[in-house]
Image 1: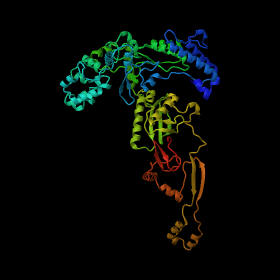
Image 2: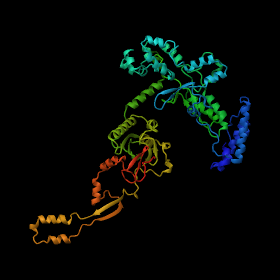
Image 3: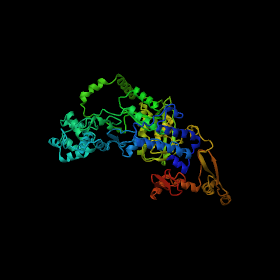
Length: 632
């Protein structure tokens, strides 16, 4: 396709410089399709894995070889439109967005998994390819139905062992409450989370079940156990209603078919099978010889892997000629988008608490103590501290960001000031700055704040002026932590303008050629008019006998105003002309009120200074000159 595009549109700009190397790569792709001897590959120290005709269907092998011949032939004739003609994108991510179950070279995460939502909570994702696969393997309708229900559950109370509608009615559950429970079961991943105050109703929990506020507020409190159900009974009901989430030990399934349904992780609480990391690497190895770029794929590893396993995975990837890989150990982050297991609420905490404490390694206990002592101690800043002040305008709103640093140059506090914002919003931003400062002084890394707050989206947002590196932000909070990350962590990847494109930092410098005031007006005039002088003289007439006041009045010149404009760095200017004085008497508050009465927003245009700004989407637009606040 890239060669055919080059025939019509021409090659990419750097093709001539890379022509020889690019054609060499395409020739190596062709050799892999025909599984040529290692000696025929050009410029490779690690030989790729070719297509094995014994394991590849003949029709697919023939199509692959024809495609390789065509790509090389057209490439030699027309060149290529793309610098990387083949690449495999992040198939797992794209698969979720496309609502796909099997995502090519990326195996499914699990037969049943939970997707974490950005706004909080989870929802259940079930692999819908299981029934077609079972039919393909020869199972009948009844067998397929039993296997599917074993995996994902029946999603109803009817027929459930130990916990069902009839038993719950004997404990005081009404038809209305049972209906609310039934509505929650299809999306539930554990029945323990359905039996809560929000589903059952607070009045029902207190009046019928006799629960106290302390019990309802305790997240470890189990309503099912309070009703008298044991852990075994809850587990049996949960397997029937919500499913086991694994195909292992399902009714009718043959053990030799387990491998068809293997996933990247162990499935459910009872699952034991998963695709080994080495298998991930080998799957990538057979595809890499035909990919001129690289494969964006995650190699999922179980939680119990160690450093040696990581080292072996990386070494194996190099041995097979992979250009890159991404290793991920399940549960290595406090939050991950997909999960297989939920919290084991069905366990008796009293039974396992002692075992967990006994099995905990000594290093873990020591590390917990160190972390606790470190966080509990506040590292105070010196009384005289350095830092910088950054002024910026985000979506038409002015912001001053000031930092305080320790002696070693690390950040210890921030101050935020919003120019002429409401008292409530300014106080909120000040409180936010104090909270961040306390976190920094108690040992919370700046990196954690950056990862938590960048890309937060709310108004005001949009274009940023006054900052050399950041030109757009999704919110004020996003701008603040982008600026801090660039300044203190060197995170230039968060900047819209690369630091290499900028000149030396000008935090403590000033452009001497640019005056603070571009235009000032100095007015020179006499302090007293002639009439005022005559009035004074008339009061003291007895002291000035013989003075001809009429002559004095007629001969005295009229006051003249001398105006001079100049450019300089003066700190003040004087304008006492009548028109200027009248303009100054009209306060800015009056102008804002008049503008709002006329339907304007009450803000001054940064270009023409007129109070004629109107709302235009999320920004402001001047009705006088057409200038905008930045993003319209």
